[in-house]
Length: 296
Image (cartoon, rainbow, N blue to C red; front, side):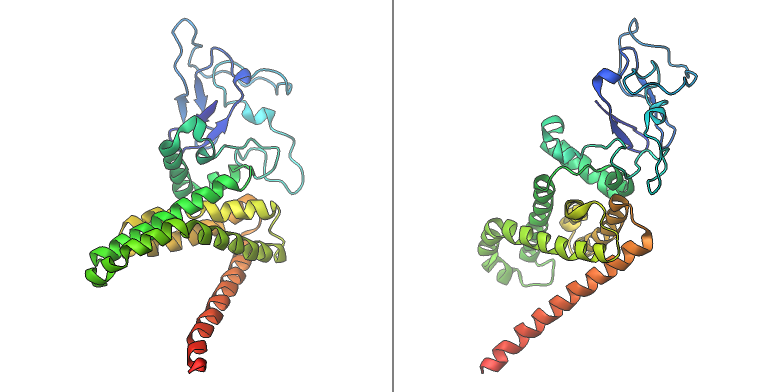
């Protein structure tokens, strides 16, 4: 069962067999907000008052009845050097509970609710999202990034057609059909290739700064889900620009939180990454500008 705090959106996946039958109240370990995570018939419900903390239970022992989150810290593994503190509910180590990404559990959430919940968590709680994000493949993060990229392309074309970007509507409408067809057919391919190349460069930079502990997959997932601000492309002119810089900030936050790196190491790797990308783009622009001239 996924238990989510309505105050700060902190969430944990709890095994059904570890939740006492009469438990219905939880206290968020992040913001200490007390709330009901489910409703039970009066005859089955336990009293809502606070229950004194019992001694740490054995790993196979059921959680005490009443507030099921009060004692989660007792079951946490012993802190080891190099790990985040055990009282951090989203500590980035493999033994800490992880929270499923809703977009990767569409069978449970549904498509639009899963997409909405994922966007909401990334945009408004990125530290918690990336620290708790499990490493479960590249497919769903890739689909998420391609979906947001296609969303941006389509809206850019629509704003061009209306003249909101300063173009002549007649000129924009002339190539709209061809552009939409190219976006639908070729867009996913180019977006996918670009994401893999982008990940390879950024992860190489992270390795140079000894900040890539979660591997290529972790970096790929960070970059893919950092595309969430592209949803702002539905706002003409300022939306794509705001989304672009927001996405860059999420990349730094996500890489630092997921890989457990220091801020300065992450910023150093990110600065090197941006420098390499700008150098490649500058070289491509130079080649495109000089080759036709040389042909003449």
